[in-house]
Length: 236
Image 1 (tube, rainbow, N blue to C red):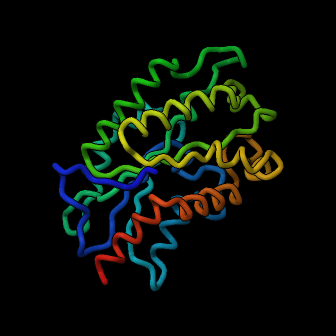
Image 2: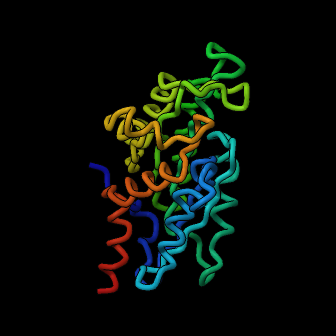
């Protein structure tokens, strides 16, 4: 079982202030498709501002269409410029990226947007760089609706490729001892009749109900619970 850890050569999570979290990735971080709540990151941000909440801070750094290469390129600058509270850098990075890399271009048989072996190298590099900054959690991709492809008339997402790319990500996280929330397997295990109504008309992005479901799965995920309980135990 994976747990949230900090390397011995880095400072432990601070004890005296709410956590600062950066959520970095693609449109699943940005929350596209959820005009009601702004996606799971925004829903979490609002919950953390309620009276009686721990007061943690989360920054939404999602960019639509980003692939692993783009997220890696902006990782450190985004991280270094999100520490205005008490002039400190963030305490946690939540990553979610990879679905755009898996898309096939122009036809269902076209090439993947990011060639698979290249993706394996890039995802490992992203994790190494992120892990040097602070503790990391990775939230995987939910399944897309293949029956509604193509997306934007040119991108074809399918479950076979999604599975390959999410497995490469999961295995890379395991190799680096980073917690990985496998939404793809979790949702597929619940059945098509459960998850398909949670995907929007474009077949790619969750709808408001889908983003609520992601946040619920996140909140029930032990590494995320440890993140929140860690702060409470320090205040006791």
